[in-house]
Length: 405
Ligand code: PLP
Image (cartoon, rainbow, N blue to C red; front, side):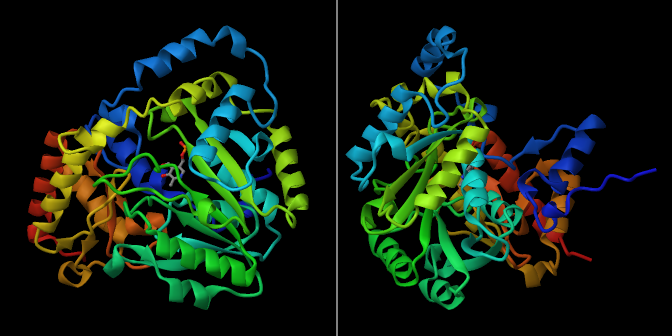
């Protein structure tokens, strides 16, 4: 009998945010154990509702959305995205440069599939949102990780990026604001990244899905606005800002100098046509969402739920002996450091499994974000304060006796 193995194309591809640790949590759930899952940034599961206006407009558009749309998306949605880009001063963007997707996720895989030949290198942050690394590998490319420096607010290490550029490097990915670290990049740093792209002729991919989730009065700067002379692909969507991750609404915007990417754009158009179009009904809410109703704002101000939970988790983590964390400025994740020597940790996945078994709380180990030392994990700080308090208490208790064997 023939045995069916997974394709060798999947060798080296992993996505641990929903990987083996989650499988173990689900196995425990099947046995009747109740688990607090802090593994995905899925606002709806933590009691965050989509704005009523969004839901109403979705319902109003059901009839008009029965058919396929243009492959790149519905006109009104793309027009709204174009205007969003105009307000933010994206250079050289017309409606033809805008593609909607079934979430940013679909577009990340699409833009890597369209670009890479076997062995082409892409600079990807470490830690990263692991779909980037996985998508580069799946497309036959080689993810080359550059360090984001915890000692420097988790900013990309410019010298490390420079060291890792080779003649095979085609592109650099940035995630700003960042998952899993919560970092927000300042203008000078972005300018340095643009300069590297200029010198080595790299495409810039900027994942900006958290651009509307910024705290402390800070401003998000889209890197595209600093790079009119480079080809930049910016990805964004509504999963996080409008709490509609299940609706699968994302888009990508091609900006800057397109004189040398005609072939690549042809490839993107073909891949976009092959999936026919993204969910048409979901696209109908983009205009409403971007048209001024930035309902996320009050969650991020002092007194708002996300802000207050960030304050709590940041202080609580830094108060636990053996843990420390940089304060997140945006998004809703914190990426604490564990004193691995003190607890004898050599396997961070085992650490997360041990915590899961003992306290029924699911976290994701740093390795799940391609972090190369066994000394970090990520907390999603969306759950209500009581649950975060419990998590911090359990972690304190757990670490008071933990030693990895
Ligand atoms: N990019 C980043 C940085 C993310 O954190 C996520 C989801 O967590 C995504 C992309 C995927 O988003 P979407 O729901 O639009 O597919």
